[in-house]
Image (tube, rainbow, N blue to C red):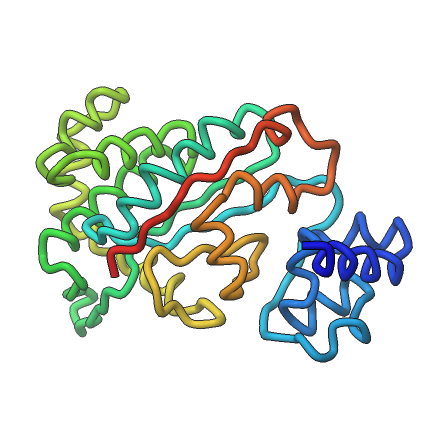
Length: 258
């Protein structure tokens, strides 16, 4: 523990205060990639520990958390219901987190000449349906997290997400007929395809679900930390004055079902 602390102190010593405030990621992730290390001004100090990654966040903007997941994936369900949603409840009113969910995961699509799509999902057709429903809810909510996340949480907390979808949507004031028509029609396929395109563009490529991206960056270390304690990762990464909610952050254990 002392050695780790000392290493961080040494890294901080390489930085001016201005650099530290602008590099946009928590100190423990500064050596995760060449780009991060260069942005944070610690490239030389990190030379023996560099891995791959990209992008950055400036100033006191909210920490952008993107979660690529599947509606019937046990690990996705566990993360959303026991880590992600509690973190959102704790931090969303502080303004330090911006959350985006992308339901698709390890699915595949075929684009046909008549501009239609067929999908194959990791957990079968029911998952393709669930992913479409959640994409339709997100679209209907205009990607406003406070509107759609309770629906996703409600569905993923149920023993069968699709069976619970109608009640979950209506409970949050959504027009179920509109959502269902979207999911069963060409619009649902279009939205799922868009989620697929976004997932395919990930760098590095998704190989685990849920796949977590912080401020446009993903490393194995960041993924592991976010799965274990997303609240602390967001609080560490945020560059502004930490809200009181960060000082009472506690760890939530993520158990993989893979």
